[in-house]
Length: 302
Ligand SMILES: Nc1ncnc2c1ncn2[C@@H]1O[C@H](COP(=O)(O)OP(=O)(O)OP(=O)(O)O)[C@@H](O)[C@H]1O
Image (cartoon, rainbow, N blue to C red; front, top):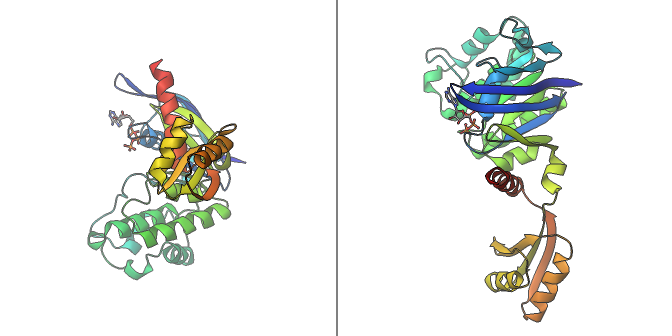
């Protein structure tokens, strides 16, 4: 079942077109990572979905209901945290939860949300005394009020320390298992890679790719990684053999196209470079994204 369906969104700020026919969908219980460079349009897409700004054309359907300027019922099942959460300095965490509860969340459920988001220990303190990490966690807790079916989270890991980032990751996975769908953007691509089921890549306001995580990370992106006793010399030899090699973390890496592994190994052996380990793996999310953006930007220049 599709929980969010975005179709052909177009958006201008003044005369500047920032979204071009953006379409994608999120099934129930799935986590979709929205990624792309600064200014690509990620926040604008999220703001449009939650009705903070409106598109010039296109449609948004949430849990089977169309979102329009005049009918915002579709938003009843959405929990939102865009940029930093808007908090009232003089209210405590628990007061915020009661304020944003539209009567659908019982006290027992609020208690559970506080436990899950780990805000119980400071929930009675006023928000003005919160660290950025505490604010983020309260922001997440607020999104969980009123039984959401969809969470829209713009950079939710901002300002979190490694432990809190880890806890938030576990929480999001747990929520997805419970059937909540999540649209999330993050600059922490390693973190996103641990939770996203699929990705939508945005560049200059256009969807460059929408793909399941496995496919996105593997399509043409296999890398050979070789450890030797002299990585710099190995890279030189491999490049001379026509492979696009570079040194990363003391290993030489090159794309695993066609016969590249054989060619590389023969070149290294002939150059008397000692090989200590060989592995072939998927590129990480950052590498896949960079590769995709480079090729998209080249297409635009042509
Ligand atoms: N309120 C606004 N008025 C005019 N232009 C805007 C406005 N908000 C965003 N833009 C422009 O729209 C484009 C998309 O911005 P957006 O904030 O959606 O990108 P983003 O992908 O979220 O970037 P970042 O990762 O830096 O947050 C940018 O060129 C930005 O300058």
